[in-house]
Length: 223
Image (cartoon, rainbow, N blue to C red; front, side, top):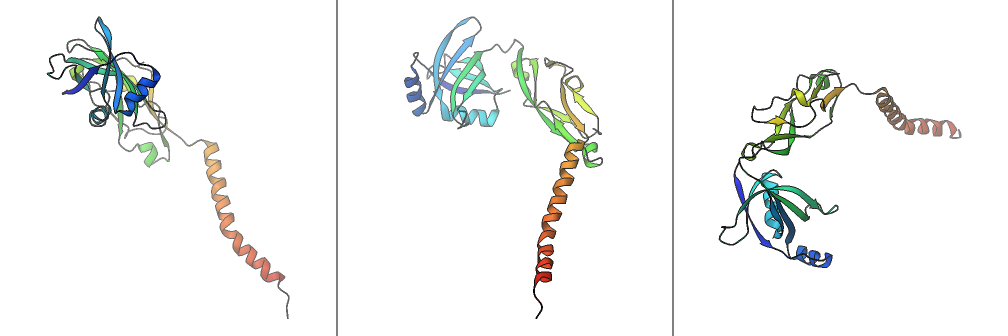
């Protein structure tokens, strides 16, 4: 996995007003910690950080450069990202954790579901995705971008648990093996009844104008 450079600058502890002013200037307050070193308050460029996240995802390996020459670079990963709950593209704060390329770490990896389940295409079932990411343990350089889950063979009543995933030998499953990831279910009777009621209501609405016209014709006086 490629290491992406990200410039950072030391930052003094700030009040809420100071942090707001920092963000207005396009910077994101951050902290880096781990590997027995002291926590360090930093600030990074918000636009550059968003570009990295959009292109590489949150499991990206970063060379956090603490001086212009890059001599103070540390290998880190993103541990936590706080976003504006309304403007999701605005990052409020990030935590970086120092890592070693020779130590295995736990990371969350997204699942990608592929295929058209037999139980959906041929049996009118419904595909229910219950978990969209799992936790694995591996070396930083071996973190996969995603893990594919083929659901094409699933019939109604079939499911896939975490233990069913075909992981590479270098990836250790941390998520509970019994965790249910996806299943194909029959549409509940209540849902079928609701669909039938909606269809009947739509038919009644479509027929209503014709019935009204017929009623008006019967009420018209004869000359």
